[in-house]
Structure formats: C-alpha cells, structure tokens
Image (cartoon, rainbow, N blue to C red; front, side, top):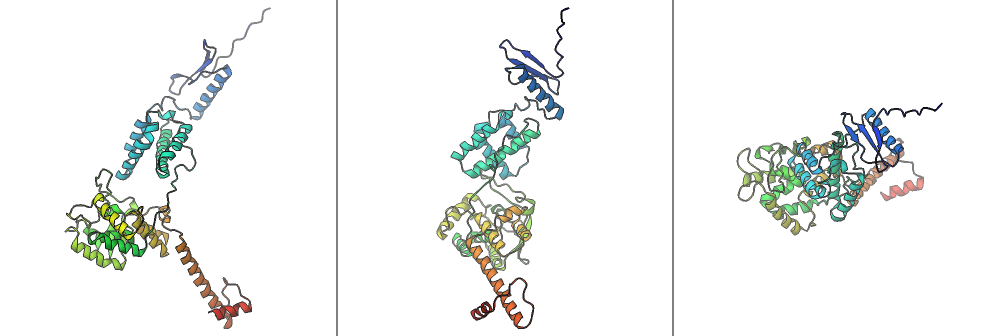
Length: 403
C-alpha cells in the first residue's frame, strides 16, 4: 500500500514563497491588517521563517513599528518638531540655524527611518573636521532630541544617536576680569555705558536683562534692582521683549553700596523719563542696539588690555565668580544670578591657583588659631582641642617661639 504524503501544516503567521530566482520571500500582516513583504529576500526558507518569528514576537510585545511610518523626510519632520516646541526666540533661532547649517546638508533628504547609527557616526566625524567641537555637540543634541521624538511617535524603534558623550560640551573656561579691570572698563567706555559695565559685573545681570531694565525696576531707597523682563537681540537685529531666560530670572538684586551713586547719576543724566522709561538708551534716545554697543565695548576692552575673546557676557561670569568667592551659600548665589539649576551656578565656582592659595591661607590661619588655643588651654589646665594632636614638648616650644 502506497504511503500518503502528509501536507505541511498551515502556517499560523505570515506566508513564505519561493521566487523564480530560487530565493524566498516572506510576507506578513501588520497590526493594521495590511499584508507587507519583508524588506529583503532570503537564501533559505529557514531564514525567512526566522524573520517571520521575529515580526510576530514584536507584534505580541507591542514593539512592532510600521516600516512605512518613518518614511517622512528629516527636513520636514525636524522643522515641524521646532515649530511645535514653543521655544524662546533665541533658542528657536539657534535650533533653526543648527538645522540649516549642520543637519540638513547630511540628513535633510533622508527618510527618518533611514538614519542609522553608522550614518550618525560618519556625520559627526566629518563635522568635527570642519566645525568647532562646541557647535558639533549642540547639533548632535538637537539631532538626538528630534529622533527621540520620532521614537515616541512610533516612526522608528530606536534612536540612532548612541555615541557616548557626543552631546557634552567641553568648552574652554571663560576668562574672569579683576576688580581693577572692571573699573578700568567702566572708566574707558564712557559715562553713558559705565553703569552697564558695573551692573553686569557686580550685579550679575545678563545683557538682555540690562537692555530691558526700566526706571520703575530700580528702588533707590532700598538699593535694589528688580529683573522682570528681558530683550534679547536676534541675529536679524530684532529685539524680542519677554520674560527672562528662566523662571528664576525674575528676581530682586540688592546692589553693593558703592554702586548707589552711579545708579543715581545715570538715572539723572541718561535714562528715559517716566517709570517705564528705559534705563539704557543710545545717544539718540533709542533702545539699546547690540551692534552699536558692541563697537564701543571692543574699543574699551582693547584699551584696557583684556584678551580679544573677552565678551561683555564675561562680566556676568566675573560677577558670579566674585559672589562665589565670598563663601555665600549655593542657593543665595543661584537667586542672585537668576539661575534655576545648581549645575549652572557651579560653573562659576572656579578653582584657580589664586583661589587655592586663599583657601590654603584660610586653612593655615584656622589651624594656627586652634593650635594657639590648644597650647594656651594646656597651660591653664583646659581641655586640648580634639582636632589638633598634642605635639611633643620640643615642637610646642618651637611653635611658641615662632609666634
């Protein structure tokens, strides 16, 4: 009796067929019911079965992504991503510039789901050869943020930006002026701009906060300044009046007493009239413009002998460093500088050789004072300070003779 050939069991998920070329094609239904072909054909039937098993497992776990969902041009997706963020004007301008100059030339005409880790690594390596490391780090962070949203939108499964530390900025430490240099700048730049220099350095005010400072924001009796608004100037020259950089930017700054006379004199001589009048205006009474002030600033900086890379913003850096050197608590420093994160303030707590010498001198003075009390206490029968070990008799005598 002839044996009956058993039919292969019907496949429970997907289908496999052999093409005229001899290779195997796998097809499977998506979660939407649409039948899709695998992105490639396979040399063996077993390879096609493995592919279908992976797709089925992904769908069961909820990890399956429609391969056609990510077929949107990166330029379109990235532009929409920026549009939907509601960013501050300066941040919006920065992101669009990074997108235009550094991301679109490489990724602009690619589908989002065609951007892989290898392509990102190649792009970064090429950028580092032609562009500053800080700009490349900013561009990488923007690319990573955009593609992370693509993951959340189920356009791609994983973010291809996986380079460890690629978004970290290792910028050079900003220079700090001395107190004498700050006053020299204030003298050289002229009376109209003198107070701007002093407030930037000794009140830690940002340039955009100074540009929108009003008469009503200054309390002469209390000797304080309230920061309520800011007016950053975009690269296009447009002033954008709005809230300060962060919620912590709205603050009251108590001024050192030596600034009070400069404030009174400036309000009397240069500020616009009325409580809403601008404190800093140009020679013709118009709002402060960065281009005009920038020329005056560079001339004053060069005359004082500060390095070419010393920016007006570095005066705020100087002021924050001076404030940190007083030993004030971190929270008080953050409030004064209008910073919402401890990380931002810690940037200004430098450890230069001069600061290390001051620290060593303070430790030296404190230890000597404690030792003196300990020696005096032993002579009078008092308890020795627990932090200072009891020296031998010859050492005690040398210490006493030395003082």
